[in-house]
Image 1 (cartoon, helix red, strand yellow):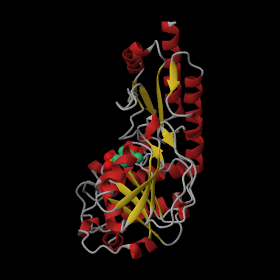
Image 2 (cartoon, helix red, strand yellow; image 1 turned 45 degrees about the horizontal axis):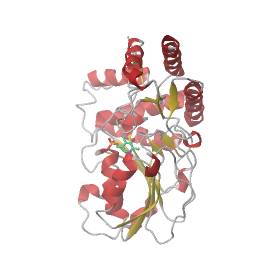
Image 3 (cartoon, protein in one colour; image 1 turned 120 degrees about the horizontal axis):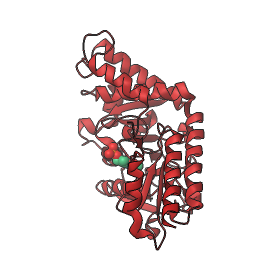
Image 4 (cartoon, protein in one colour; image 1 turned 60 degrees about the vertical axis):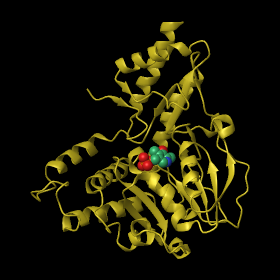
Length: 357
Ligand SMILES: *Cc1c(COP(=O)(O)O)cnc(C)c1O
């Protein structure tokens, strides 16, 4: 039986995507070869790469003057590539969680880091708002969705300096005004595909800002832009699956529909949490993430966590154990998770509540 997959990453994928990937792993079209076997320089894969790029540009309405890259290394490698290429003297960061802290740590290897605001004082349960972006920094880096702590920035900021965003866990969940950003990156495995490929949207003008001369070849954005992500062998199978996800996104109505679904799922679950005598949300309401919904048991019930996890597991629910830095539960409601799975979780919460009161 198919489970209700609330995993924080790698994420649930649509059935049609799993089916088409399974077929291509056996044989890609009528090529007589698997997607794992074809040459990345052959016409079959070249067409896949081209279509994946075009679909991605279409879905996100990426303006002229931007390049899209599909690289390895995960979002974590971008924590280092961004400052290696663009931090010449000083950069500004928001510290909104574990991943943002990781990005800051890497940036400090390359120059001065100005942490404009941090929500660490309250275990990252809110998204900082009152800060001023200085004009004398090379760029401003944000993490739009904090996967571990369940907070999210649902608007596109105006920035006087290049704006760089880690959108690993909420990319493709709503329409985004890409023109406000100079670089967006994300590991595919949260909302876009399987692990193994990282998507980067980069404004071509950014390449002119690189002054450091000792950047290793494979860490230079310019090299990847000039080689259409084919400087070395790209993660072909993961890219194929991303293409299937993009086709699925278009087939169900694009980012407007993803946005509507994300809101409907989040409303359903947060309303249940807020109405509960047993469960309580951890993030402040105005900054709640639609992707990663974090909640714990209220005081007096905390010894019942394992019981709830066991009940949930008996209903086919997987992946709701919270990250150790928050505890409790985290239900990740990525694009491919159907609202019927959220309903099963809500029903299970109600059943549990009845059983203990
Ligand atoms: C998961 C995650 C990362 C790390 O991604 P990898 O691809 O595993 O390196 C970075 N940022 C955010 C917001 C994440 O959710």
